[in-house]
Amino acid sequence: MTFADSYLGKLRLLVGSRCLLVPGARVVIVRGDGSILLQHRSDFDLWGLPGGNAEEGEDLREVVIREALEETGLDIRNPVPIGFGSDPEYETVRFPNGDVCQFFVMMFYATEFSGIVEIDGSETLDLQWFLPDDLPPMLDNMRRSVEAYTSFMQSGAFQMI
Image (tube, rainbow, N blue to C red; front, side, top):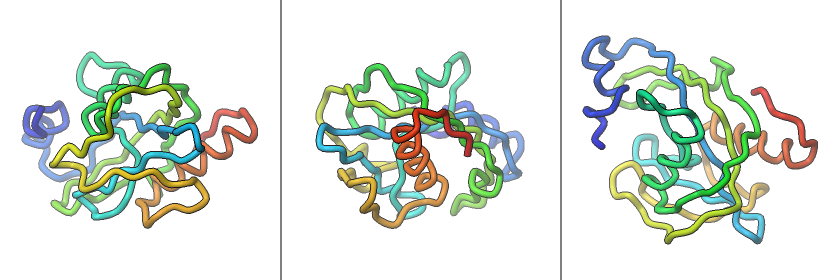
C-alpha cells in the first residue's frame, strides 16, 4: 500500500500538514541472544523500531503484525503489549516534509517470528540487530520504547511513557 492509499495519506489530502492525532503500534523484536531488530529509517536517517499507523478496521495487534511484516519481512507471532507511548513531548513528530503527527502508540515485544529479514526498499534503509544497551542513533520516541521494553522485562509492569 502506498502512503497516498493509506488512511493517513487520505487525511493529509484534506488537512494538509497540520497536527493529526494518530493511533499506532511499534514492536521490539527480540532474538534468542537478546538483541533487538532496528530499522534504519529513510525519512529521518535514524534508527527506530518497526511499527506504524492503524488503518480503518484494524486493531493495534493487527497493526504491529502487518507493519513488522511490511518493514522487516518477519511474521511475528504472539506480540505482547508492554506499554503505551503518548507523551506529546516525545510522541509529537514533525516529518521532513512538514507533516506533524502526535502519536498514541501501543508498544509490543515479540520473541516468536518466522521469515527472512528483508529491507522494504522505501521506508527502510537497513535492518540490523543491536543489544539494548548498545543502540545506534535513534529517534527519541523509539529509544524511549526500547527503554520501556527493558523496564517491562525487569519489572513486569506495563509502561506508560
